[in-house]
Length: 343
Image (tube, rainbow, N blue to C red; front, side, top):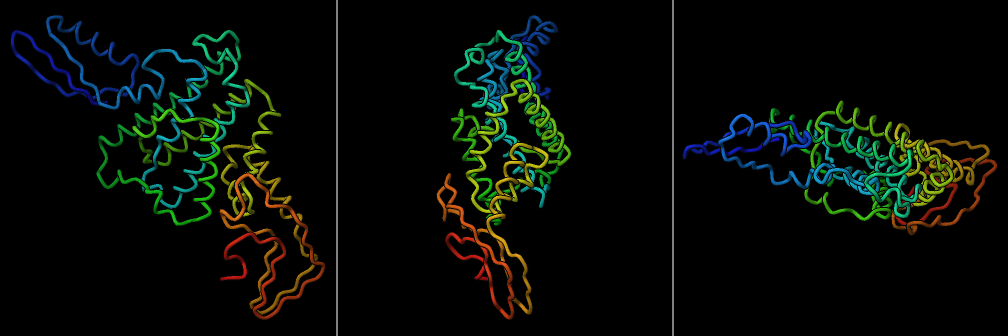
């Protein structure tokens, strides 16, 4: 972190430029104490970056200890601060969705443990071992984000300008990815009202090895949080609600693949719903020739089925099918827009 130090002694004013490890707590008092001990006669003023207090608030290190509820809220928000560098290339989409899913999983923990109504989560010093362990875990989660911010800052200070280019989500033309991320983000925001800090600050991860390390460490901490409060039925109920927002097989397949190493409960629920959709549409025996095409399964276009509804479940089965020429056969329901029959 950069800061300027102005000292004046015997009428002479000097200004020095320093680089300091980001958020080495307690930052201001440590720096001032060290300098004053070296030059007690100097009049000192410490000028920190304009976003210091905002970042410190996000990481929970300005006002000292925070309650479990406050730490949880900050941790959920911190996911939105992260941007990915353009050098992630085609892996950008997969990495971004993994972050979205990890954030969704954390947001699920809050209502599962009744974070808004448990008085032990509202105080700085919890009375139970479970709440104290949860607090330490959330503090560690915020430290991961703090370390990621530090790595980003260090990289920027030495990297070439072309290495600092960020991926622009607006250039993503994969409609399936856009729909998937939109639903996941809406689910998270529905559970928690943002503190608004994410509009003011952000940082980027430029190397995949840093991202992989961060997401793996986040997953371990989320595993720990869920083990501290093993309310499995609550977790499963919330996951079923989440999966209920995904109506088509394509989105469910993408969701199950993206959550493979990040959220096992979500993956199982997505696979289960996908199998139920597939099982309602089937062909016993099919023979195709020339350019004939067959699609088995329901087909949805985004906005065709209102969010949170299933669109109804029907059973469509064909015993024996023979398709020739340019014929098109769709075994399943079709909801809105151009679909399988229109190339």
